[in-house]
Length: 367
Image (cartoon, rainbow, N blue to C red):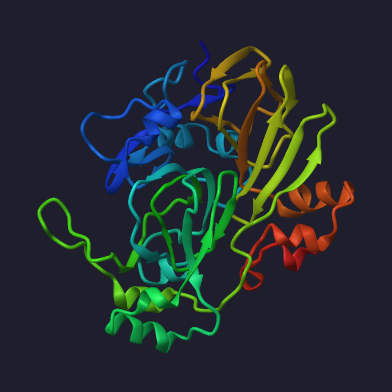
């Protein structure tokens, strides 16, 4: 067994987070083995944040933390990306049985300038499940100014200023740093985000914890980082192309921090993943799949997330019963998003739509 090589995909132990708004749907919907008798709001699938380091489950690196693997293998693990001393992304499932607080996150510059951390928090949400008529808060209504927000906080009318949109299974929302937001009840979400947990609460619905204590609000910090500019591009529509093997590959969202693609394989389908400049992360949404590479295979079940090191350039995914999965990476936007879509006849306007908010769109300057 050669411990000096990182030549296999890696499964990690989930890290479960108890939340006041959580539930048990991660067990019933994604077959996760949750701790008993607590409300689990989040399952951190893959993280190198702070001391919440993912630990390898099985294989020759079993028991090793992700951070230790980064120290051991560096670019062989992470690839050619700006941040090489830690995983720059955090992957989680969110089970919202009650509404989350109205909150906002800083961007990279604000986080570093105020010593809030090395990363801001831009994120995206893939809706795994949603109850009928489910809605999510993203941004403010058109015409809202910062002074209106300050007034809304003082007279408890903030809710009247918030923009809500309907969501259903399979939707993708892009939430750049500075976007005020709240995940509402009845949604099960897969989130890809920058590696940060810096969250500023504007409003928490008058809620208290088990001890009857209200959670802290961060009004000053929120007002410093929030963006009131209105736009209608929070929900990202998929750009779908057929692969050479006849499967469906959809680009779901793209920014300089991450790209997320969705693959749908028919019964008996097989797909070779295109190599990327970085690591890749695969999350299985429904039926199990099998990863195949030179020297091995790995079964990956529903709701599981697997890390593919950058050094592992050739890997295929098989689905005997048909399956869908999400694949994400830290992209070279030009060579890994723009050029592949242009080569399939997709217009620049459509490609730009993957970046959402025009004022924070990382694709537009490259088109």
